[in-house]
Image (cartoon, rainbow, N blue to C red; front, side, top):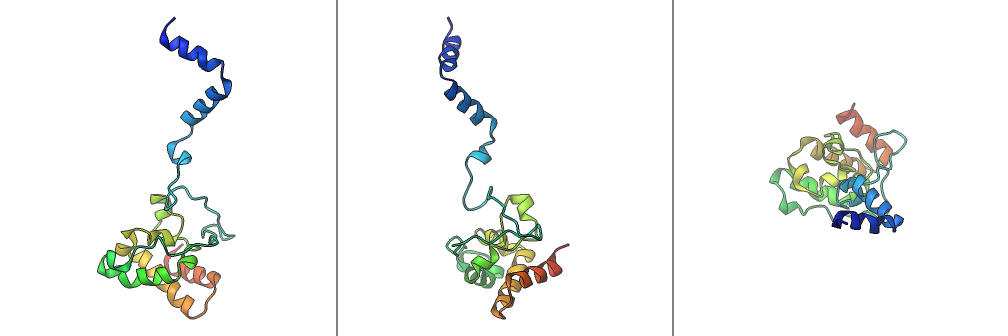
Amino acid sequence: MSIFSSALGGLARTPLLLGALLIGALVPGTARAQDHAHHGHAQAVEKDGRHPAPRVGITAERVLPADSVAERGREVYTMAARIAGMLDGLYCHCDCHERDGLRSLLECFENAMASTCGICLGEARKAFEMHERGKSLDEIRQAVDDAYGP
């Protein structure tokens, strides 16, 4: 009896192990291990079908420090850190969700990508300024969609 048939015989006696191995082999690695900072978030979407539902307890802890990004984006990174929960409920119209798997506009500011993207910077600036004027998330979403989206 070969080593291969011996190993298969042992696996056949343990159907649960065999099932787990088969499932593990069929499920893509990205679905098994998801990076908390980006890819693979469950995309709970609000009724408009595009903007993600803001998550409870989101903080700015993952927003890059302003002094660590290109000068062009520093002011907006500071703004983003102040309204992290709001940005978590906004779709980013640079389409990084489709391209990079980012969940929300907030995640654009958790890396340096937003520092060179006029759409990310513009959306976050608009959201910050409207938030400062007391506008609701729905009003901000509408303004961002009007300015940047279809």
